[in-house]
Length: 261
Ligand code: C5P
Picture 1 (cartoon, rainbow, N blue to C red):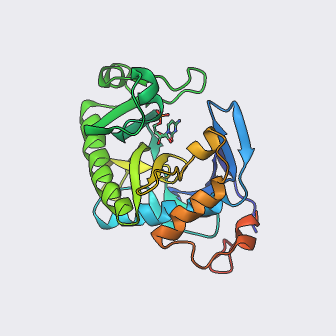
Picture 2 (tube, rainbow, N blue to C red):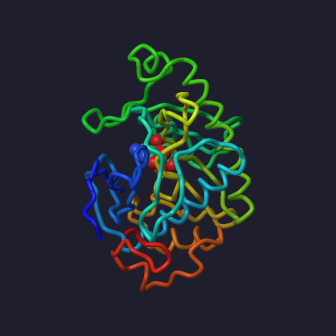
C-alpha cells in the first residue's frame, strides 16, 4: 500500500490525504474515550462497526437531500469523504432528558421533551467543550447567522429522519451530536454540510422495550458489553451482516471488496 499523508489524528478517527484534491480518507479507530480523554480503552472492532453504521446513515441522509461529506466506503475501516472546513462546534440535538442535560438541570433521565432541544458546544479540549449560545458563535466568528440557520434546519431534519429510522428497528433516539463543515461545491459555492460521523459513539440509543443502553454510555458508565451493543445496533439496521467476529477483531483496514491501492 502506498504511503499516505496523515492530516490529523483525533480520539476516534484519523484523517489521511485522499486520492484526489478535495477528498480525505477517514479511518475509524477502535479507541474509546470519555470525559475529555480521562477515560480511554480499546474496543476491538468498534471502528469497523462505526464505519458501517455511519456509512449507512449518511447514505440515507443523502437520499433525503441532507448534504453531507460522505462519498463512499473504501474498506472495513475507511471511507472517502469530501474535504470540508470544519466549524469548531458540536451541535447536540435532544429528544429525551439524559446525560449533561439531566445533570445541569437536576432532571430525571428518560423524560420525553415537549420539543427537541438544540444546543451548541465550542470544540476545545482545553476548555472542556463549553456550552455556548448562538451569540457566542456569531460574535466570535465561528459561523455566520445564515450558517447557524442552515445548521438548525439540517439538525432538525436529521433528527426527524433518524428518530423514525431508529424507531423502525426498535430503538429510541434519545440525543446525538453533529458536526458541520463548509464545503466548496462544484458550483464554486460554499455550503454548510454535515460532517464527522453518526454512530453509537455520538448518539444515545435505548432499546424501545427495555430502555437498555446501546451506545457509548455503556463505556462511559462501565456497563460492559460495549461492542455487543454496537453490533446489535448494526444488526438491527441491517448492516454488518457479512462480517463475523474474526473480521471485527482484525485491525487491518483493507477488505477483499475494494481496498486502497
Ligand atoms: O454528554 P451530553 O449529554 O451533553 O451528550 C449529548 C449527546 O452528544 C450524546 O449523544 C453524546 O454521545 C454526544 N456527545 C458527543 N461528543 C461529545 C459530547 C457529547 O458525541 N464531545
